[in-house]
Image (cartoon, rainbow, N blue to C red; front, side, top):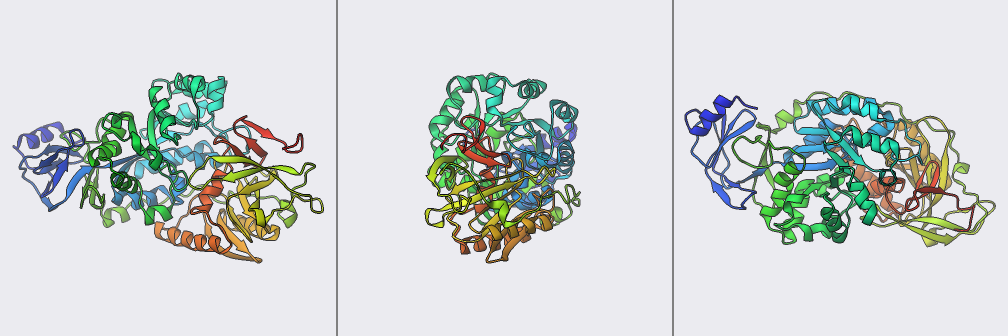
Length: 569
């Protein structure tokens, strides 16, 4: 915060500002009106708006100034780059605040990963706040690389970048009164606690909200969101690379509901960031759908700030943090220049960021992998099948008849029944779980990944066991990442050596590798627009309805592992 005496003097017009933004108009996200005149900055703070101001001038002829955008819930790991590269990629698009739950890397490395995330946030050119991961592991139906308890979280909660308790994904545990879940919530009582309760309704929703959880980003329909709003939750409208909920929730974006809404990306990869954008893409999409631009920009800034208690930002007004985006137009949301805390995010500023502190190298430890690893024995011919739905992380719980072929329930290309396999890669316990998935469209070869929410074991989908084994072994050599294999050859790959989740390469390099992987996946028949993140969510046992972990198939509605051979289906 700038010195008060300087701020007051500049605001009165008795002293020169450190920087004057001139020639633009300002969107008042409260009234929706435009304000003409200068904007004077003192250090990281706005001193005056709409009045003539002395000082070094930055001419922004014809631009519209809006408050910096706030991504209220995301996992930077899903950008596949380090926090430093993430800020370089999204800052120039207008994102000046990001609220990060690092539970992906925390599930691999535990509390040291949270410490690493807090340190990275401290060095960032944009303001990154860290929600401390509440569910490591997310359930007891998976093997993660670490376990984080309430004591670990309490030890870190006073860090300057620690912002609260991250999404409480074990919503069945909360509703049933699980002591560990409630202990973590109690440790952050009265503070910020994020929610995660897909499809939760009725008395269960009441029990969840009664704990003090106040946000929800898993609403995927207008009706679900309205019920959660009525129960005191604030809705974070999500548009990730897989779960795309903006279209369904645009009807909520009204003047009446805007104060209770914010935007988030949750999981968005470099392909979508590079080709479509980040929060700027959400803003353009909502405006194109007919939402009043003033409402959209309010939701992206002031509403988000007030939901999270960030009273120092969200509006271009005196005394607020100088998070400012200069746009060519409101409808285009085309950032011409961005200031984060009064610092313009130029190429030089972004290039001068601190170096990456490496963590989590050599984290992929697999048992011996052969084609036989992927065989599925079983007495019953009726098999559970995970049904993938494009654009959703919810999956269907299907059942199909699969005949026995020499002791194996084999994939069936004709019915789009592919093998899905999860292999434990953290502790050397040797768990391997095989099942069926439908919806990838794969007609040969295999794709594999160590990005496997939230436990981040190795997951593979394919038709050919030899190619599946090749892809898995290659990922171990790469220290994790993505791989496409077919015909005994690796067609494309991306190394993610930071905990098997993030690259050490620049954003542009990662994006280019993803383009190669997308082409390779399409060449073997994969029809999903984003197959690798979709693959990761096939293994997340807190999202209905059927999932798979290294321990086996999970009926998420029953919140239990299932044995297809214990009873038919």
